[in-house]
Length: 244
Ligand SMILES: C[S@@+](CC[C@H](N)C(=O)[O-])C[C@H]1O[C@@H](n2cnc3c(N)ncnc32)[C@H](O)[C@@H]1O
Image (tube, rainbow, N blue to C red; front, side):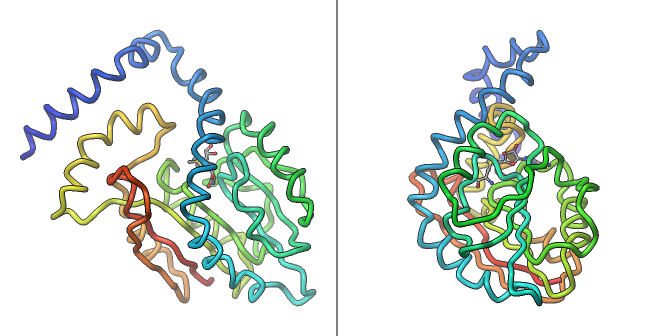
């Protein structure tokens, strides 16, 4: 099986030959960082349509985590073009962070369209190092489709725990690795290197629930679902929240 996977990975990789050539010339990384926000703006519309009911259900409990003042303080990591604002309750104070500055123009548009929230200045920073954010200063951290591409998931979760106040929650919705005994996993492995190379480091085969289980949260609600997308390697998802 191993050799078959490697040969098929190579065949899929041939489709990305022009991008590999650009990479060889040192041009791919800066170009993909510029193009990716445009791709995400398109993909996010379809994603939100298909996942609308899941997101609505997931974020329904957000008000339960408002601090003593009654106002909810949310920090979203890897905010991208800003696709979750419609699910946050009226008056929520939101801080958006992302490591790619090229998302800002789309993010600002989405913020202007969702004027029921109060926005803190956007932060361009990796979720592995949010040193501009004080310890125990937010009620909720949100991550949707970010942990698949973070360079170090363990460090991200450590930062999330640091900035959450005690009793605060980490909300997540992420696509994940399929069960290893399935054809979906077989195809995830085949597409994985090319997908990761073309789509800004996105890893199809991460078992993110294992990182969450190891991250010392006091309580976790986590569900595995088979999300409603036609392309099977993208279907396995986890969603839920973990309490500090
Ligand atoms: C697939 S997009 C998802 C965007 C948005 N969360 C959504 O649900 O539409 C992944 C986002 O995570 C950001 N990202 C990836 N790794 C990151 C990291 N280590 N720290 C902060 N942002 C990161 C990317 O720049 C991109 O905006």
